[in-house]
Image 1 (cartoon, rainbow, N blue to C red):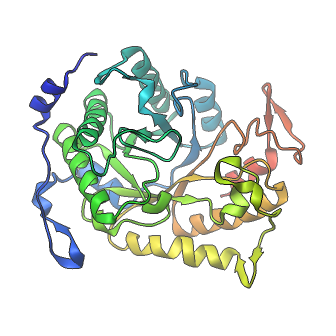
Image 2 (cartoon, rainbow, N blue to C red):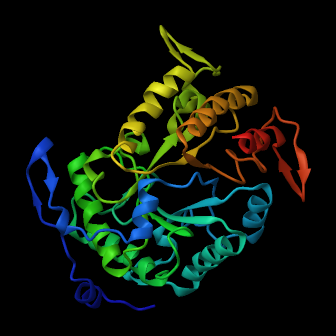
Image 3 (tube, helix red, strand yellow):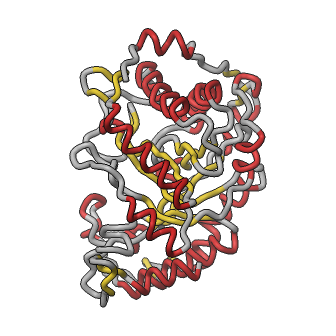
Length: 365
């Protein structure tokens, strides 16, 4: 697929919404952003309680391949109905030309969307690494929040998907814009979101759009509550429980966790999760914004009994809130299959090692 920067700008108009200062320091003219279609609007106000997993086949350009149909089949067999695909845009983007995409790789994503339809699983596409922003290493050369060129490339990525999947109902497919924006002001983030939402809706107003919360998905974004866009939170707090011994966050420095967890005079327990991780997002929900938990889970070095107790509290709170979720991950060190834990008696499941206790906890929730 060959699209030049010039033809992309000509066809999209590179529209940038007008901004003006008003209440709370920043407000936008609603007319600048096209409204969602009726079906997408209804879903964004109240998301179904979709439950499932993250699939990582396109997570990193250094090691990526096609998605696996068995993953969809097994999830469906167990009763799950949601997959999030956290993806690295470099997997299908020509490194010499960011407006030239690799059709053979895009077909892998097409296949995942088709399997979602086949197995009645909602598919949510996510740019885990987007032009100009990532939580991973190495960092992007451009800055999505500051650089016009990064924003043009970001718009191009999502309008490409919008055109490619136009007509697929929003009940079956959503766009989760960018993974875990952090260290950015709400106003700068809102500017980029409003711009890309405008670009997507010019192509397909019926596409369900989901925004991660700020500060790595932890904090709701009230500045975009008027957009008809749902929002996604996380279930990793407290990090010394979920990421114990995880080298990429310095988890080796934390002592072996318990649940509840006590640090000095502070106790982290179910009440803490309810007040700190649920209540702010319920306030967002009152503004007519649907909420979903896009990632949660614990690294395989956290004691298994601690994982089950901690997740049991989270899952019960999400159930009470009426929120769906997507575990990180399905197969791998956080997942229910082939997680590599040393304190689990695994069950053989079609050639894979199944954490039956963790699966049963999810199924009860």
